[in-house]
Image (cartoon, rainbow, N blue to C red; front, side, top):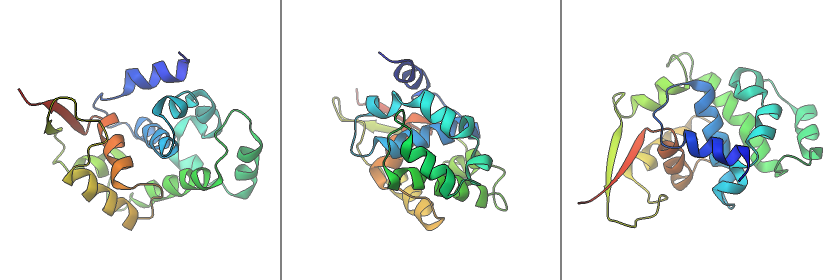
Length: 169
């Protein structure tokens, strides 16, 4: 198992408000679309290097030269739409600033800063959509985020600990 996969497993589901960690989890969620989470998470060391240790302020300043470099980097998943989405998402995070202190404050405001518990039937897959995931996805799209459909956002919110799934007794 790669270091990135182990690192992601350690992070997954842990409640976090840290902007860099949230951006990291969002990057994995974006790249996970159409792939396995293991494939996306295995690239965490390369993502960390490429995306300035997941500092959205730095990534928001990236443009075509950085994108061209990413497209030549064999350690990255070289999907141009997803790479552009990471940059667009960093910019969207920065645009939250007038209204929210940071990305964490934005995400957690949807749940009044409390973990949202989703009771599920035993064996239900993680990508089970929820009203919260759909609401956050809709708002993120409205604010300029890319690759943030309801399933992707649901998994992202689970990874960040905003949503916690519990099986019915």
